[in-house]
Image 1: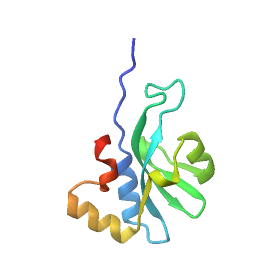
Image 2: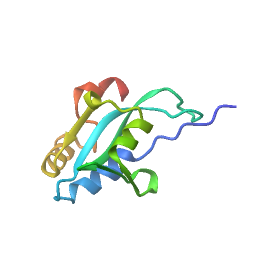
Image 3: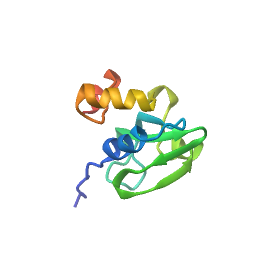
Length: 112
């Protein structure tokens, strides 16, 4: 029996966090790949997290993950060219402009 894949709250949870942070926290929208033995094993999906310097902050699904960026990118098989970063001001502007926490860039249209 296949497990039902639950859509997470990564865009809203991390978007809210980034919208209130001004200390060089960037909101990231990107493409990740499902981890082995998960319901989305090997599937590419649009994801959202926050970054500052070499650290990732991920508040999705009620978690409070703080992970070195290099490890997070390895675990999610995230490629730099598949990531779009937004400043605090850009997060506020785009969330109002589009009426959603994301994704906002056209490169993610096929994942919606």
